[in-house]
Amino acid sequence: MSTLQGLRTATAVLVGAAVAAIATVLVAPPSSVPSPSDRLNVAVVDADATAEVVTAVEDGLGRILVYDYRHPHRAEKPAASFLTGAASEQYQQIYDVLAAVGPRQKLIHRSTVSRVGVQRLTGSSAELLVFLDQETVRTTDGSVNRAPAQIRVEAVRTDDGWRVSSIELL
Image (cartoon, rainbow, N blue to C red; front, top):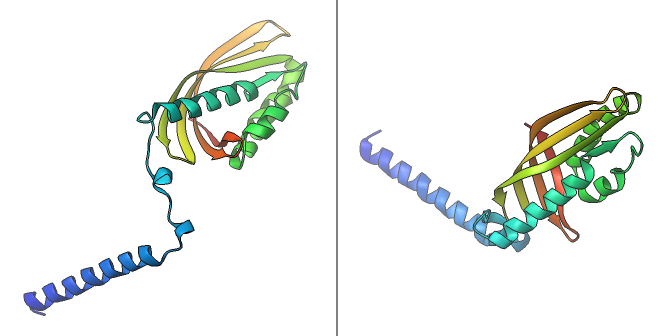
């Protein structure tokens, strides 16, 4: 094949691909094309939206990242309303570890959000990096264990506000 024929073939392929891409966008139903607010990352740029998701995640995590052997089910109701999707199961796995040893060791645990960084924020979802200060008290012997932790959180906007859909321990 000559260079000219190769160039014509490549041009035809590129034109065909461009036409197919344009046709796909033009004939796609409107509901399948994300709105600009669902594609555009406004983390930090939109201070109000960033503050809203940070506040929601801080408050929600503050209500659920607690365990007290005297009131072991205290966080269940807040967790049910704040978590959705995979986060519910991920949280249950964390809680099960505490519940297994908590009554025997008479544990009191609290994780406090120290910093939140918003990595991505759109109209309907957010990815955040959360830094936690954790404290666990074993009341059987008075020992106190303090440790930092980092989690990656994905959140989705619902009619009820922001809800966490994924929690990943880093």
